[in-house]
Image (cartoon, rainbow, N blue to C red; front, side, top):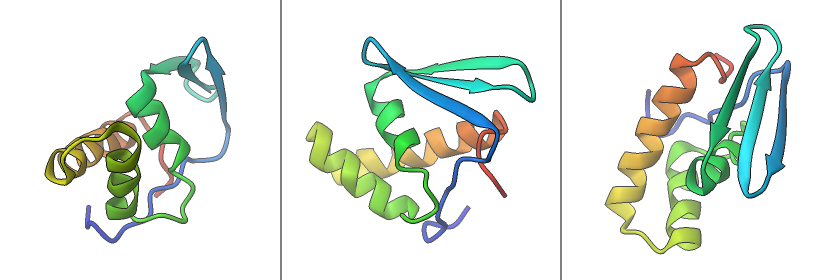
Length: 89
């Protein structure tokens, strides 16, 4: 779980934004995940192109939070996405 990793959503997921919330449908596990604005932004940045640190910087820019807090939040959320099986390996 290094800071330099580039998290990427795994294939087979369908993502939509509904009333400001990001909804991710996982057809494989038949689960639906709902994310608030912050989690939705982080999810949208899991393209495999940005590092964990770069994602945290985007959170700082969008939500005006302290960099250390953004880094902590992004790390925790990415760990949760991984635990839910939403990120590719």
